[in-house]
Image (cartoon, rainbow, N blue to C red; front, side, top):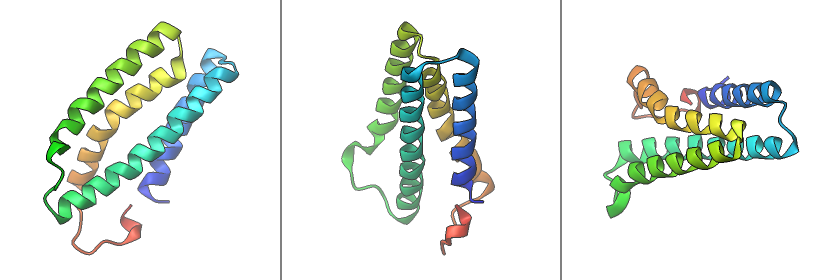
Length: 121
């Protein structure tokens, strides 16, 4: 099992646990599914970013703003989901905020090798 399989399984388990604990209706299930798919996209994008950063200097001038917009987006979603009492997406926001910290820690333990093999991920 690769790292991304484990990450996705943990996120699905956490979101499923919140759904069961809050007796979420079908709208909550839709929100949890959207959060899960968003997380899957973000985990792939993070891996692409890690590889590109290791390979070359970013050529997009505004790349430094990505972190600011990421944080602003999550704060906005948190406020919105709290107002709606949408607990699964709210937990998803926490997972999104923790994910970059997890990846930095993971890369400290498992630096990117010059020769990439798919088994690393």
